[in-house]
Image (cartoon, rainbow, N blue to C red; front, top):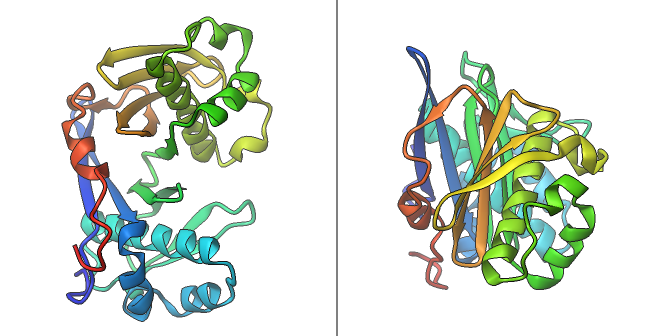
Length: 261
């Protein structure tokens, strides 16, 4: 149960189907507009080792990123796996800085995290059905840097310079970063390894991608305002209505800059 004193993070449940088997994923977001509330009530959300890790962070940006990530992850875990208390679950760092879930559930859990200056997002599933997530803001300067990382094949997908192309290039980057999280290799691997084989629009502000070297995965990307969120999941798993951006607008729309909301 989410602590009553705290604002409830937004969550989105995603039923996934592989033949007759159903898997459930949960995406949750925590926004910086509510950081002050979560910081004052962090003892009601964080486990002992997490409180210690937060107290060791001196820079405000690092503290915000760390706490918002834990809030998003725990909201997704409580929604998807029905934990009674967020303090029962701890998110620790693996040797490659990947998030590792310490929890009382019987089911092994896959967790992927992402952050921007405004938002943290998490996706949780059973470990048998790995997924990755990434979220970025669409910025011209960042897009120009991303262009330098594109392979020759990928550059053919994005010949233009319009606002739509800028969002599409950002979406492609987030798809590759989400894949790197599934693979637990991060973006330190050569970009050619994460190359997109295809990247096509499914509708306004929605894209689907596949990968040249990891044909077992596909990506979906959604643009909401100046943010793009991507998920990577097993290619043969079916996500209902991926072209519908409405649930993602509800998930990612900015909150008022107030303590409660």
